[in-house]
Length: 139
Image 1 (cartoon, helix red, strand yellow):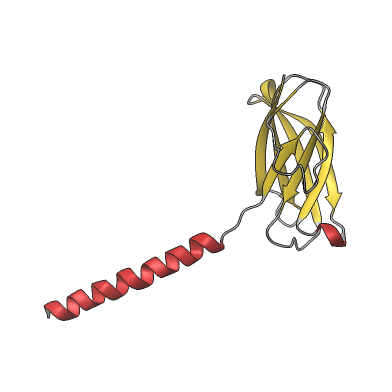
Image 2 (image 1 turned 90 degrees about the horizontal axis):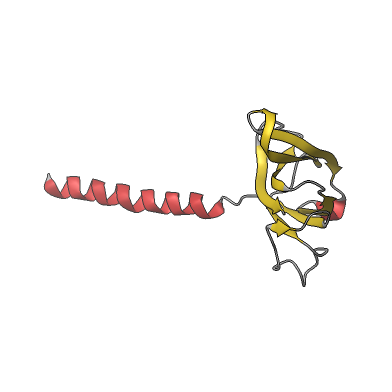
């Protein structure tokens, strides 16, 4: 009886760990990188999170999975004293992904107000759940 019980526990632990590890490593998330220069293969690792006032903020949106609708919605939200719980919509853009941009999109935005900003990216398939979000500061 003890051997059967020990064997069942061993089977549960061995198969459970394998499934958890497989689930953890296959889950890739989208991300946003910011830079003060146009993003190329040479400058992709020089990401920043602080920018001077009036400078272009280049961003790269990376998506590990191909998007179904090819339409993205990007929001730039300013944190601070505002009407809606301290957040104010600063800028928004609809993006149609081209054939060569199914896994990434790069562009820039100019910010002319000091403060902390959050960039959120949504898919048009699920407009209530952000694919990714990231934060940067303008001083």
